[in-house]
Length: 68
Image (cartoon, rainbow, N blue to C red; front, side):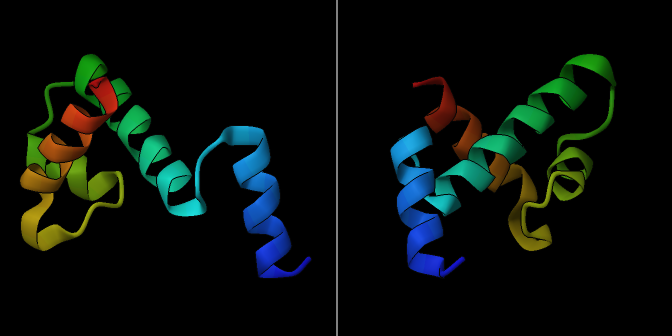
């Protein structure tokens, strides 16, 4: 499957771009971990695939955008 076809199908079925879908999945996973454990925010962010240099900031921003 070509990249452009995949992009269009994802957009049609999820109403999200591939990057948005990946970030949404990461945020949802982070929410589950945060609720079920007492891990530090930076460890959760790194565990969910956010960049390690600014994990807590990225996670906080993503959670804020996700909740709105």
